[in-house]
Length: 166
Image (tube, rainbow, N blue to C red; front, side, top):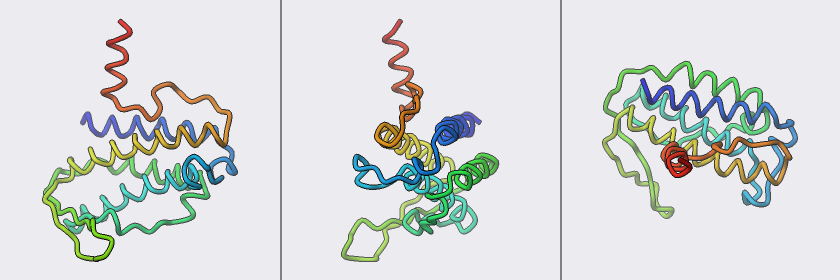
């Protein structure tokens, strides 16, 4: 499945960058990320996939109902293990799901939207790329590692850039 391959490739890119960071760089707050760390952004990405897997079993996805597990944001090896688990568990049959979300900070009342597993995988992929772009900015502040040109860049933008270069 093209979607599974795209997610796996994106997670591999992220893991390769994490492998180059020291533990302190991974967990160091970044002023350009409003004092969030690279690890906090990685945790956020991982936990959304975890919410999707939990929701797949129940038929109801709620991305706001996350653990916010500090171990993920402070232990990059644990984060990499979880990303590998995500990659291994992408092959699920598409099925209808309900997405719960609340956009009113004064209320706990959720709205429910019909969706499906594949659509939510697409959301998670795009969400991952978005956070990788933020991670890229944070890395420039906390580390001097080389970042690939396409890290945190949407596939459509990569294709566009290649077409313009020809």
